[in-house]
Length: 334
Ligand code: TRP
Image (cartoon, rainbow, N blue to C red; front, side, top):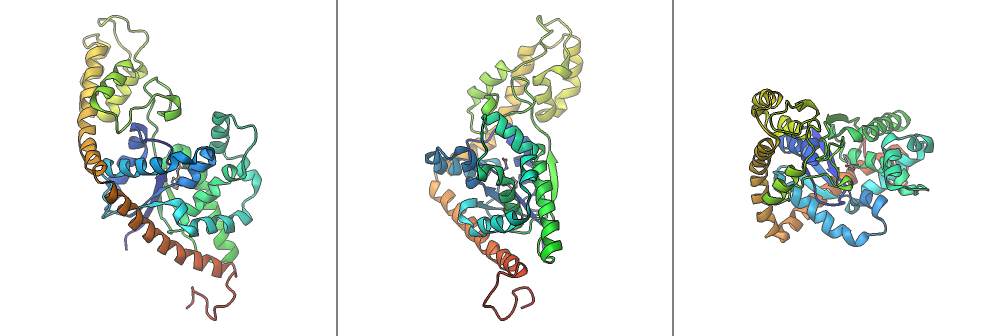
């Protein structure tokens, strides 16, 4: 039996290179070694977008198409929609009985997001979404959760919930391990590439757009003329070469420091490399965009599998919590 991976995204827009480096690339690599579950967390998206449910349908399809374009193989991985798996909602309620409100209020990711959004009061669903995320991860008894570093507080809470549950009610849940990927800097040099900071290259960007964005990227501010010695380690474009164009890095570092290669050429080489990398992704996107019914089928089949597995875990959880009134035999011993 293969071990399970569960990870996923909120459908709040198209995925970018930050998602690619942060987790998508890794999922594609691991999808044949693990039984991989990818959750499109639409309920979680509503914790910040509750006023705009009209965007959900498009956003869910965009994320699914991005996964498939990035190389997720629907024969290997299970892509599913969070709100369509009732067990996730039910597990959330059961777990919420023993998670103190203060633990949620002190969650650093919740705090950062609340600040970014300028929330003056916290909605119950937003404050509690880390509990729901624990349900996302445990409904299929995932062993491994590959995510960006910003998700660490949520994974730590999940691990705590699992330990507490098992201690209170018996060994039912599996404690997952985190696998943390790095963050990709934004084109503006900001520590994180993100849609809300408007500093992202999207997987769906056409080649000209990639060239345009790379040309605007922040470089070494001390370097004005091509012959000025550059400082690659403060340069955003150098960081991207290190991530996406490793074999060029030693030569680039030497030439930049000596003022032998200018920023214009360096950027051209990066844009070319990124477009090379994105080309197969574009090809698969074209394929799936022309077959939206196929994408629907993939989502429905994935969700059906998730529903079935969720029912099983939920029955075990209810049984352990003694919410099982008419069965003569427990589902676990029977
Ligand atoms: N919180 C994640 C994000 O914002 C998305 C997510 C929802 C998730 N449920 C998950 C990630 C379960 C990993 C596992 O990107």
